[in-house]
Length: 196
Image (cartoon, rainbow, N blue to C red; front, side, top):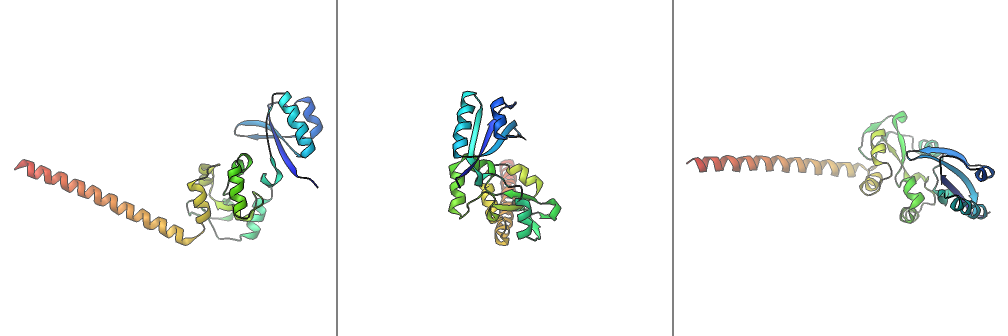
Protein backbone atom coordinates (compact mmCIF):
# COMPACT_ATOMS: atom_id res chain seq x y z
CA UNK A 1 0.00 0.00 0.00
CA UNK A 2 1.34 3.44 -0.95
CA UNK A 3 1.67 6.53 1.15
CA UNK A 4 -1.46 8.42 2.12
CA UNK A 5 -1.64 12.20 1.99
CA UNK A 6 -3.94 14.90 3.26
CA UNK A 7 -4.71 17.64 0.75
CA UNK A 8 -6.14 20.98 1.82
CA UNK A 9 -7.55 23.41 -0.74
CA UNK A 10 -8.15 27.00 0.36
CA UNK A 11 -11.22 28.29 -1.42
CA UNK A 12 -14.56 29.64 -0.23
CA UNK A 13 -16.58 27.51 -2.69
CA UNK A 14 -16.14 23.95 -3.84
CA UNK A 15 -15.59 23.82 -7.60
CA UNK A 16 -17.23 21.21 -9.82
CA UNK A 17 -14.08 19.12 -10.35
CA UNK A 18 -13.57 18.81 -6.56
CA UNK A 19 -16.83 16.85 -6.12
CA UNK A 20 -15.32 13.65 -7.51
CA UNK A 21 -12.69 13.53 -4.71
CA UNK A 22 -14.89 13.51 -1.56
CA UNK A 23 -13.60 16.77 -0.09
CA UNK A 24 -14.88 17.69 3.38
CA UNK A 25 -15.55 21.33 4.18
CA UNK A 26 -13.57 22.56 7.23
CA UNK A 27 -13.21 25.88 8.99
CA UNK A 28 -10.31 27.42 10.90
CA UNK A 29 -9.26 30.92 11.97
CA UNK A 30 -8.41 31.84 8.38
CA UNK A 31 -11.80 30.76 6.99
CA UNK A 32 -13.19 27.85 4.98
CA UNK A 33 -11.11 25.19 3.26
CA UNK A 34 -11.60 21.71 1.81
CA UNK A 35 -9.77 18.57 2.89
CA UNK A 36 -9.44 15.07 1.48
CA UNK A 37 -7.27 11.99 1.94
CA UNK A 38 -5.55 10.73 -1.18
CA UNK A 39 -2.77 8.55 -2.59
CA UNK A 40 0.27 9.66 -4.61
CA UNK A 41 -1.38 9.37 -8.03
CA UNK A 42 -4.53 11.29 -7.06
CA UNK A 43 -2.43 13.86 -5.18
CA UNK A 44 -0.60 14.88 -8.37
CA UNK A 45 -3.87 15.05 -10.31
CA UNK A 46 -5.64 17.20 -7.69
CA UNK A 47 -2.66 19.55 -7.23
CA UNK A 48 -2.49 20.05 -11.00
CA UNK A 49 -6.20 20.94 -11.15
CA UNK A 50 -5.87 23.24 -8.14
CA UNK A 51 -2.99 25.13 -9.81
CA UNK A 52 -5.00 25.52 -13.02
CA UNK A 53 -7.97 26.83 -10.99
CA UNK A 54 -5.68 29.21 -9.03
CA UNK A 55 -6.58 27.55 -5.72
CA UNK A 56 -4.00 27.66 -2.93
CA UNK A 57 -3.22 24.19 -1.55
CA UNK A 58 -1.26 22.39 1.13
CA UNK A 59 -0.28 18.72 1.12
CA UNK A 60 1.27 16.62 3.88
CA UNK A 61 1.59 12.98 4.91
CA UNK A 62 -1.36 11.47 6.78
CA UNK A 63 0.92 10.79 9.78
CA UNK A 64 1.13 14.57 10.32
CA UNK A 65 -2.64 15.10 10.56
CA UNK A 66 -4.44 15.55 13.89
CA UNK A 67 -6.21 12.41 15.05
CA UNK A 68 -9.75 12.61 16.41
CA UNK A 69 -8.78 9.91 18.93
CA UNK A 70 -5.68 11.51 20.48
CA UNK A 71 -7.64 12.92 23.48
CA UNK A 72 -9.15 9.49 24.20
CA UNK A 73 -5.71 7.83 23.91
CA UNK A 74 -4.09 10.46 26.12
CA UNK A 75 -6.54 9.83 28.98
CA UNK A 76 -6.27 6.06 28.59
CA UNK A 77 -2.47 6.21 28.97
CA UNK A 78 -2.40 9.06 31.53
CA UNK A 79 -4.97 8.40 34.29
CA UNK A 80 -4.05 11.56 36.25
CA UNK A 81 -3.70 13.65 38.35
CA UNK A 82 -3.26 16.41 35.80
CA UNK A 83 -1.23 19.63 35.80
CA UNK A 84 -0.80 22.09 32.96
CA UNK A 85 2.66 21.59 31.48
CA UNK A 86 2.97 25.30 30.79
CA UNK A 87 1.85 26.94 34.06
CA UNK A 88 1.71 23.99 36.51
CA UNK A 89 -1.95 24.70 37.37
CA UNK A 90 -3.80 21.69 38.84
CA UNK A 91 -6.54 20.49 36.45
CA UNK A 92 -9.56 18.24 36.71
CA UNK A 93 -10.00 15.82 33.83
CA UNK A 94 -12.81 17.90 32.28
CA UNK A 95 -10.56 21.00 32.33
CA UNK A 96 -7.69 19.37 30.43
CA UNK A 97 -6.98 20.45 26.87
CA UNK A 98 -4.77 17.81 25.24
CA UNK A 99 -2.04 19.82 23.54
CA UNK A 100 0.42 18.78 20.85
CA UNK A 101 3.80 19.97 22.20
CA UNK A 102 5.15 20.23 18.66
CA UNK A 103 2.09 21.88 17.07
CA UNK A 104 0.11 20.18 14.31
CA UNK A 105 0.20 23.29 12.10
CA UNK A 106 4.00 23.55 12.38
CA UNK A 107 4.43 19.90 11.39
CA UNK A 108 2.15 20.35 8.39
CA UNK A 109 4.35 23.10 6.93
CA UNK A 110 7.82 22.67 8.43
CA UNK A 111 10.44 20.00 7.78
CA UNK A 112 12.23 21.27 10.89
CA UNK A 113 9.22 20.40 13.07
CA UNK A 114 8.85 16.97 11.42
CA UNK A 115 12.56 16.31 11.96
CA UNK A 116 12.22 17.25 15.64
CA UNK A 117 9.53 14.58 15.98
CA UNK A 118 11.62 12.00 14.13
CA UNK A 119 14.74 12.73 16.22
CA UNK A 120 12.60 12.10 19.31
CA UNK A 121 11.66 8.70 17.90
CA UNK A 122 8.10 9.69 16.96
CA UNK A 123 6.53 8.70 13.67
CA UNK A 124 3.26 10.59 14.10
CA UNK A 125 2.15 13.98 15.38
CA UNK A 126 -0.29 12.11 17.65
CA UNK A 127 2.42 10.06 19.40
CA UNK A 128 1.65 9.98 23.14
CA UNK A 129 5.06 11.58 23.84
CA UNK A 130 3.96 14.65 21.87
CA UNK A 131 0.75 15.10 23.87
CA UNK A 132 0.57 17.11 27.09
CA UNK A 133 -2.14 18.29 29.50
CA UNK A 134 -2.78 22.00 29.22
CA UNK A 135 -5.21 24.53 30.63
CA UNK A 136 -7.43 26.41 28.18
CA UNK A 137 -5.59 29.68 28.82
CA UNK A 138 -2.08 28.32 28.13
CA UNK A 139 -3.30 26.31 25.15
CA UNK A 140 -4.78 29.39 23.49
CA UNK A 141 -1.66 31.47 24.28
CA UNK A 142 0.66 28.78 22.92
CA UNK A 143 -1.36 28.14 19.73
CA UNK A 144 1.24 26.95 17.19
CA UNK A 145 4.30 28.51 18.83
CA UNK A 146 7.52 26.64 19.52
CA UNK A 147 10.62 28.00 21.29
CA UNK A 148 10.12 28.46 25.02
CA UNK A 149 6.67 26.83 24.80
CA UNK A 150 8.30 23.67 23.42
CA UNK A 151 10.77 23.56 26.33
CA UNK A 152 8.01 24.07 28.89
CA UNK A 153 5.97 21.32 27.21
CA UNK A 154 8.89 18.89 27.45
CA UNK A 155 10.16 19.81 30.93
CA UNK A 156 6.87 20.86 32.57
CA UNK A 157 6.04 17.34 33.69
CA UNK A 158 9.05 17.26 36.04
CA UNK A 159 8.77 18.65 39.59
CA UNK A 160 12.44 19.67 39.59
CA UNK A 161 11.76 21.99 36.62
CA UNK A 162 9.01 23.80 38.53
CA UNK A 163 11.16 23.95 41.67
CA UNK A 164 13.92 25.64 39.63
CA UNK A 165 11.41 28.04 38.07
CA UNK A 166 10.11 29.06 41.51
CA UNK A 167 13.65 29.45 42.91
CA UNK A 168 14.61 31.61 39.92
CA UNK A 169 11.49 33.78 40.39
CA UNK A 170 12.24 34.16 44.10
CA UNK A 171 15.84 35.21 43.37
CA UNK A 172 14.62 37.68 40.74
CA UNK A 173 12.12 39.22 43.20
CA UNK A 174 14.76 39.50 45.94
CA UNK A 175 17.19 41.12 43.50
CA UNK A 176 14.49 43.56 42.30
CA UNK A 177 13.56 44.51 45.88
CA UNK A 178 17.22 44.92 46.83
CA UNK A 179 17.83 47.07 43.74
CA UNK A 180 14.87 49.29 44.52
CA UNK A 181 15.91 49.57 48.16
CA UNK A 182 19.51 50.29 47.18
CA UNK A 183 18.46 52.98 44.67
CA UNK A 184 16.19 54.57 47.24
CA UNK A 185 19.01 54.47 49.82
CA UNK A 186 21.43 56.17 47.38
CA UNK A 187 18.77 58.72 46.42
CA UNK A 188 18.15 59.58 50.07
CA UNK A 189 21.90 59.72 50.74
CA UNK A 190 22.41 62.22 47.90
CA UNK A 191 19.61 64.35 49.38
CA UNK A 192 21.31 64.30 52.78
CA UNK A 193 24.78 65.02 51.35
CA UNK A 194 23.38 67.66 48.99
CA UNK A 195 21.54 69.36 51.84
CA UNK A 196 24.67 69.85 53.97
